[in-house]
Image (cartoon, rainbow, N blue to C red; front, side):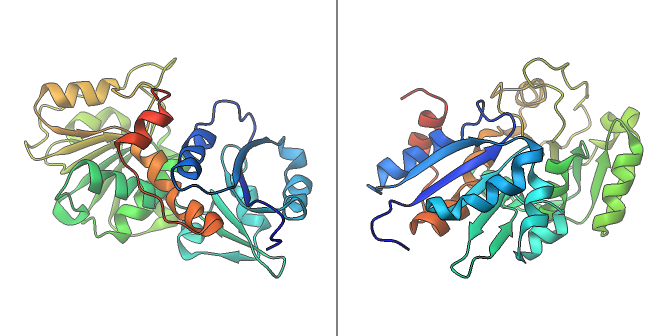
Length: 279
């Protein structure tokens, strides 16, 4: 690396103004006294390849990638981690000294670490998981749960065919269920995960009954706007353990920051407050 250049990283998306990643990484840079920068980069899909190619020349060490570029990011890489290959998308790119690009997907890592931190003692092998939604985030979540030893995953999506494609791609003990049956599928589930947009600000609430969920069940939502989504509120009212979705965002940023800036950062209460704009 050029000693006269401060380390640079960023996040690429379209649009990008809503991203909290600059706030996240900026907090870490200040905390650890690193003379570097992390910036938002808006690139339309037709400009992604050309824009990405120019970043190493400007001194970038890597970038996070968000909607709609995660699949294009994987295709642009010369090296792909096993988890990125399994998910079929990348959210973390590292520019290599030889001019190549390494693609990784840290979404599943962030999901698991959020649960481990937010619900001490939780383990994926404790019982069946019910996963709602079958988009890109769901793919990363299901892959991570399978790798962590989940004995059964009940997968539901409003469009069943999409859930069947995901189940077919990942294999393992994934059982597709009809969306109309999600309340019944919560019976006996040790983990209930909402990866759909339902419950997000501006979206309809997620309509699910949790009556049959066991008392030890953990309920989580990858949505973090609002922090307490309808499913989390319903679960808390029943006395179930809940973990909000913000921690997934925070933890997924750890591997990239460590690669680009040479420091493995902490995810703690101060970081949460900073990313939420409360300090």
